[in-house]
Amino acid sequence: MEDRHVTLSELTTGVWYSAVFDGHGGAKTAEFAQNNLHNIIRESQFYKKCDYARACVEGFILTDRLISQKVDESSGSTALSILIDSENIYCANIGDSRAITSYNGHTCPLSFDHKPNRTDELKRVEVYY
Image (cartoon, rainbow, N blue to C red):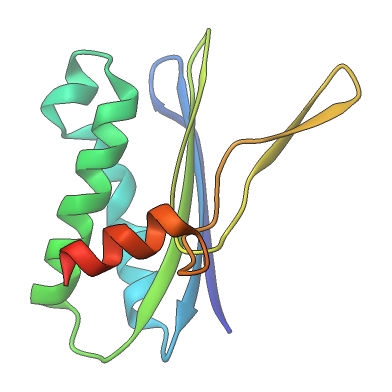
């Protein structure tokens, strides 16, 4: 298991960031994501407009593209990131890393596993490939 994580007290003023990465087949992809995903999200045009949900989606897509260009290893990684501002929690994930929160004593999922046994995930993978 090639686990990596990063927590920044503030990505920018008033926005906190934390992420975990579970590497598969080596550490380089998880390390690249650990070192770069937060910067890629922060540099997004959507982040600058405080559209954090879209910034996370764009950040994950751009990070994936950069990994295929810059990581010289046949490895992969799950990724799960959380952005928190003064009003909302934003969660983005790839793979089967999970986030939950507790509210008034009840647990609430923030993410959903990307596994082929989910009909919508199987359809997405089949269309992509």
